Structure formats: structure tokens, C-alpha cells
Amino acid sequence: MKILNRNSIILKIFIMTLFLLVMVTTSKLVFKYGTIIDNLQSIQIEDINFPYDLHNPSNKFKLPHELDEISGLSYLRQNELVCIQDEKEAVYVFDIAKEKIINACKYGKSGDCEDVAVVKNTIYVLESNGHIYEIEKFEKKNHRVKRYKALVLSKENNTEGLAFDEGSYSLLITCKGSQEIEEQDVNLRGKKAIYRFDLNTKKISPKPAYAINVKNMGGGTFQPSGIAVHPITRQIYMISSVDKTLLALNQQGKIIAVEKLNRKIFKQPEGICFNSHGDLFISNESRDDGKANILEFKYKQ
Image 1 (cartoon, rainbow, N blue to C red):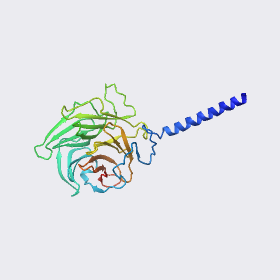
Image 2: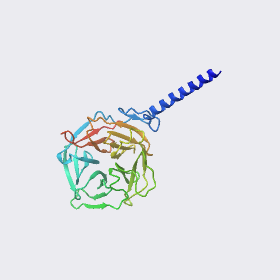
Image 3: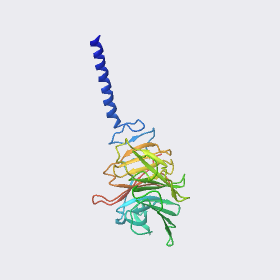
Image 4: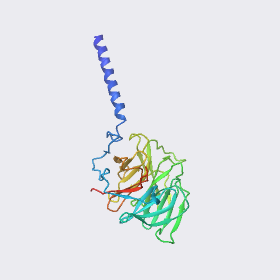
């Protein structure tokens, strides 16, 4: 009987050890919602068909030297995208049909400009220190410029992504640095925050609009460099140049898809936007003696 009990105990210990080993191994691969992640492939958290073939762009537009360090873009009108150049406080209107700059607007001195968003006839430009430029009637010579400096975000946050959210009439802002705001009792460890700049009050809420859990999706390398709101589904897309990853979120902020980007296609993806039909545009800075470009991906409904 003693031998039987001893064997039973040994068997139980073996089973528990095996179980723990499996749990530790899979915990590195299991996403928040129970989907196993292969770091080399894309995944979908919900039962959806991802509407873009990111391995095969439908068009590739080479950019002129003025946009070698393109850091953001936003849709203006048919065939026209507004682009921002890092370290140059000017916005450029790039015509993808003509493949050239057709307009430019200078609005200040040199700074670390990260992203741009178009709201009707007004352009908003985000700096890495959290400051926001507002350029009204930017296509006219008598355009008006205002800078919002006394905001809750700062250089420690290293703000990089900016997008217009029509539903809340606000600008969505992502941070590449610290996700938290000073003196706010919010724990965002392992998460990426999206803040709102209210276009009515011209203030940023200190409480994140979304807190995205990215702790178990490839470590802490996801650092959003761009953000955009899909004009049809209202889903939120975020892109990270550091680890070449694109996230899609539903309107509640839940991750519904994770797409790994081919490094040969996406040299340094910094900007992201959609046109009114849902076609996706992603910009890449110039790298390896190649030109900066904008890639277009047709929307598959």
C-alpha cells in the first residue's frame, strides 16, 4: 500500500510539473483573449476577415526629397494627402495621381513634428512634446495659426500619433514614451494609452479614452507611431514602426486583429490614414538609400 501511495504521489507531481511547463510555455504565446500568437504571422482576435492584403500594395508612390522623413499623413480629398515632415514645421499636399507636391504651408519654426490630421478646412499638427498646432484655412495665404501648449501631455510622453475621430469630434493621440500623465493616479503598466483632444473645449482629458493591453503581444516593443480611424467601420488602426506591427481595435478599444508587417515592404512605417472609400495609406521614411514612399492598400469589403 505504501509503495502504491508513493507511486501515486510521484505520478501527481509529474502531472503537475508537466502542466506548469505547458502553461509557462504557452503563456508567452497566448494573447489576452486566448489566441495563440505566432510572432512571424498575423492573427485575428475576433472572427473577422482582415480587409487589407498588406503583403501586396495596390500602389506605391515615391515621395520627393522634401518628404524624406515623412512622419505623418492625413486624407484631404480625392488623390490628395496632407503630409508632415519631421523637423520641418510645414505641411505639404501631395497629389498621388500626379506624384508630386502641389501645395505647401509653413506655420512655424523648426520642431519635432510627428503627425497631422485634417478636420474640414483646418489642419492640426502634433509635436512630440504634446503641443498641438491649429492651422485654419491652410490652403489660403491668410491662414491663421494657433498653438496649444498648456496641455496635460509633455515631452516625457513623446506623442507621435494623431487622428480625427468624427464620432466624438476629437483628436486621438498616442504616446511612444510614457503612457501616463503626471499627478494622475492611473496605472498603465503593460498598456498603451489613447488620449482625446476635444475640438470644442481644445483640451485633453487626463483620463485615457482607451488603454490597450499589449503586455503579452511580443513584449513591450509596440510603440505607436501613427493612428487612424476607419471611415466606414469606425475601427481604430494603430501602427508601430519599431516592431513593424499594425493593430486594429473596435470602437470599445478591444484588439480585433494584429498584423505583422513585412520589413522589406515597410522600411520605416510612420504614418497611416484612410480615404473616404476605406482604402488604406501607409507612409515610410527613406531608408537604405531608397526614397520615402506612400503605399496604398485597397479596401476589401
